[in-house]
Every structure is written in structure tokens, then in C-alpha cells.
Amino acid sequence: MLIILGIIAMPSMSTGIDIKREQVLQHSGMRMPSAEKILADYSNHEITIHISHYSGIVKAYVLDAKGEVVTSNKCNISDAGNLLLNLPQNSLGAYTLRVITDSNIYYGQFYIVN
Image 1 (spheres, rainbow, N blue to C red):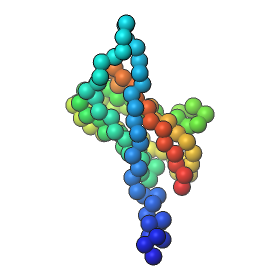
Image 2 (image 1 turned 180 degrees about the vertical axis):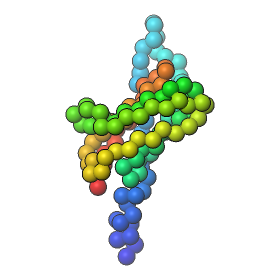
Image 3 (image 1 turned 60 degrees about the horizontal axis):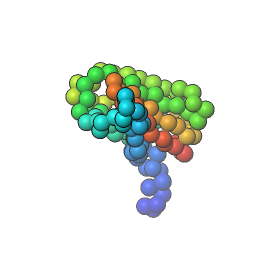
Image 4 (image 1 turned 90 degrees about the vertical axis):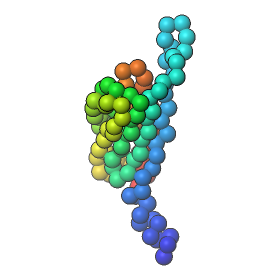
């Protein structure tokens, strides 16, 4: 009974997306570590991106396996806030999340299996 309940509840559970910062060279060396903190969760065809220690415009894109933009959004953050992305229903497959701030680009890969 618990296994069936777990299988039914699984699609609505939140899944974290591992976000990494792209290594970009600046002038003659590596960029300094950023104080920005970016976290992302996927649940029920919606990605919630949590941004902290940052003020400015944040842009986010979800790319499919072909590199085509599936959805995008942007917002102005003042120290901390959330950005939401809605994915279409029946969007099974592999995706890349790209989050762009004024000074950094972050990415994370995730899969929607059912």
C-alpha cells in the first residue's frame, strides 16, 4: 500500500536541479568567486529558481535536448527572490536550465521521466 502511495505521489514531489557556474576567464585569470547563490527545484511542470545575494536582472531559459528554448522568463531581483518557469504538459525528456545574471552564467541539467 505504501509503495503504491509513493508511486502516485512521486510526480508531485519536488526535485532539486544541480546548478553550476560556468567557468569564464576574465582579463588574465579566472573570475573571483561569486557571492550570488542560485538554487532550482522542479515540481509539477514548474521550475522555481531561488536567487540570493544578488540585485539586478535575472534571465532564465530551459533548453531541450536539441538546444531549442522551451520556456524562458526574467525578473528584477533585489538581494533575494524567486523566478518561475512553467514547462508544457507532457514535456518528457532531457533539459538544460540556464540562469544568467549580470556577471555570471549558471546551468543545470535535469530529466523529466514521468
